[in-house]
Image 1 (cartoon, rainbow, N blue to C red):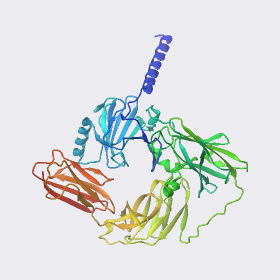
Image 2: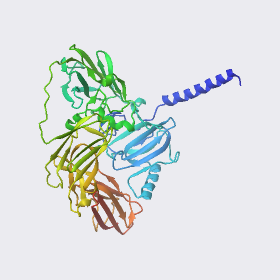
Image 3: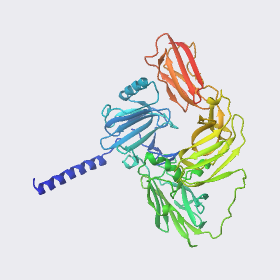
Image 4: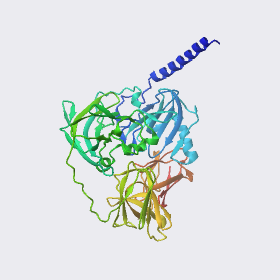
Length: 566
């Protein structure tokens, strides 16, 4: 073959591959719902400990709407859980993407037959299975499930994602030409100017934004310190929806120069928790307000910053008036702009000192492992658990009723941690109660179970946040209450068995249900505390015996027993 023919062949193959890629990209996905797509949540939205990795679609406030596969492919994963995504399906497609459908009520018959089999094989409601490639083939537009409210969903809706199959990185579904009516620009509510001259102590000033004739502005100039950061409280809206959704992009200009740009085009599960470095965490914790920081902390590995000049920090060296422009935009190109002026304040603010004599402090570097120990208490914070260095603060507080130790103020929970720290509390506890002891977080005199294992005379546990901790005891067994069942009941038209299970102290660790000494599938909804059994071939005519065993985190056990007739 001549060089000329080889070149022609390579060019042809290149064009053929390019054409295939273009066709795949240009093809339209089938909408996951057959009704108008209304957004109740957007990609990259600020959530607790994570950015939202998909979009939430309204289902008219009800469960049971048909859910459609957006493209042909095969079921690559099925997960069922009382938490998180609840009932969820993953479909891998030929174009290299995977679609995810979560908070479902039911799966289609051909999918559910496999799921039911796995429930009984594993004798578990919670399952996570990976069918073989092409084991369950799905066609474009096929009904794969019914919409629901399972898992950690706060209301009936469909959580929908598109991921890159190879990397498993979530992509913005709104970049795939789904028809959503949105010609409304984001809303800018407030900004926060943070004094960052002392890297160990951020001081913020919240400024409410004015709007006149569709233009946002601030009275100015705003007096600021030599080094500041800007944070913005903004949300997006779309036509015929009341929801306050997340924005897609934020830009900050200083004197017409772009110094910061955030774009929510794709996410990475391995860095998703860095949302706590991105947001003003204290505002979220104390005031339930969500602010995007338009600057980057030292330990922040997010890849969504497309432009960063001086990491977004603004340093003023003169007393001239400087112009700032903030832009917030959504996935459909609607943009809101806020302009304002800043000027260096030459009058130094008085530093307020903490006069609490009982407070112990220690410098914690975000780069290093940090350790603090005092009488009866210690904490180990792994390397790179903090997003920036802090002055760690510790204080002993008086015990309260129900506790077996003092309360230890372990810094402040408005300072986030990326990795879990290990705390150890020393206490003298009766041998009969040692297995019932646990470390609790104390908030407004309420106890929240954390865990704990004994290591000599210390009870130790990993914690995911700073705060007040102490040792508590749980000797009370869980509660089990029949909803539509009781001993001696005669069932005629009933098709389900329902019970409520709860534990007010350490929480439920596991449960098991049998009917006539055979394991049965009882679904569990932690939101309603409901166990539910849908009748199958395990129930028989005549006498039946139901037994439910529930165990809490401190191994307290309760057993519910009911003999009934069907």
